[in-house]
Length: 377
Ligand SMILES: *Cc1c(COP(=O)(O)O)cnc(C)c1O
Image: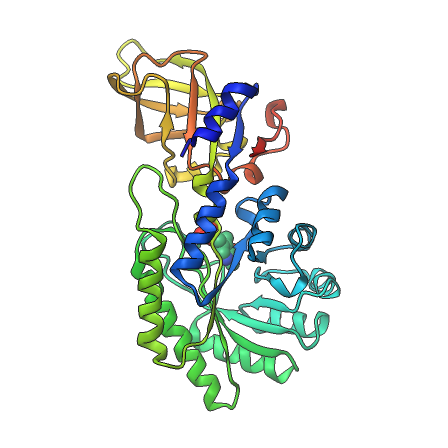
């Protein structure tokens, strides 16, 4: 949402070119909402969603922990004031020397999803704690994380037994139900899988303690989404259902839900045209597209709200495209986007809900366009 602080910033600073403005007050509200929704779960912010130093420093000061996917992200979290104990290396795909570097920095909690990765961790971070990621079907998610990460629960048992045998601390199970998950019940099947792995390991004398319930919490784009508290209630009910009174330690790793609605991209209309006199759709070209940070419009998966000064006037379906010389740089075409007919060259367009997964996806210099600038206020 374009908060008054963001609107005031844009009105007074008038930055040229496309840029993201992030309102830290919204990040703080989101953090507090997660803490209230799941008071017994530790929060590990997924750094990749928006690693701006100001965001990381705020979250570190509020008591957040950090889910990192690389040594560089570990260093950013440390720089922001987190101790190594508050960092999880949550990527299941790591170079052995990066595991060693993270371990040397004090990180002692690692994700794995196969015995090959367990062997790397055992060599590079002896004695560390590991959790095994299980697959989920990603149903209900607008940005599913598919089959790239995780293994089936029966394999997770072998992976954790192997970790234990190699002197690692087999700590628990993790999963991610898919990003922009709009179904509050989506965690249930994965929590059942976690319980199944816990029991199988207990039978072998290995006591697991941790369920890492990942991210997936949505940002409001064009449609309403359930509140953090609705997710908290559904998740807590599933934990009770499957684990009874012996609840495990739990963590959540919100990324999008922590920062998505805290950011707005200011863009500008560069061209409005048609492809033929009879063309039903106008083409609206903005000064930002897929290569400028809006990569999540891939397959038109994420539909961002766009605000213009002509809102309320009559609209027409438009194809919305970016400014670069690549025909893949079209944001919405299969489902054209209704925009005011009076929208014209030079008009400002505010693209809302863009605090997550934008700045880091921007290309370095495609067509000489600089990476997306960000102001954190
Ligand atoms: C990306 C990621 C997250 C954050 O997911 P969101 O859907 O943005 O909340 C959390 N955990 C892991 C392991 C991830 O890779």
